[in-house]
Image (tube, rainbow, N blue to C red; front, top):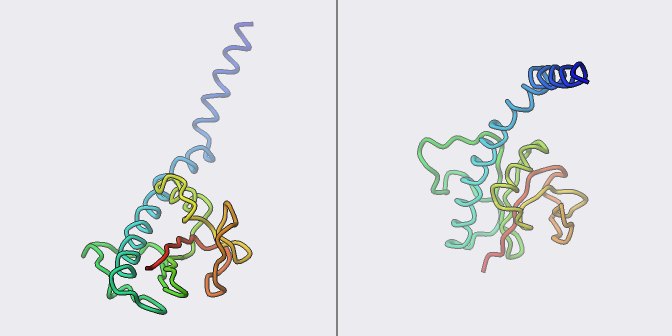
Length: 140
């Protein structure tokens, strides 16, 4: 019985030290960095859209972003039909990190079949590529 306990302990240590485990641990901070980077861009875009009520693409140059901020992905913002869409390419881990940052908001998710997932209720325009991290807000 002691041999089985020692074997289980050694297998646990090997699992922790394996390259796959270290890769997962290393990707979590990177995903959180992308999530925070997106959140800063998203909030600036939503603030601009609410204040200026533009129509069409919103240039990064007009957004009030911190001077040291640099996009980690090709984030885009566009206002169409009374809604502001902020979107860009992101991995599944990065999308999960953004959803966690925004506490599971239904206004944040992944573009799939012209719908915002995970709930699939919010329709998305064709200009948002499938698989993109996407946020939507009404612009009044």
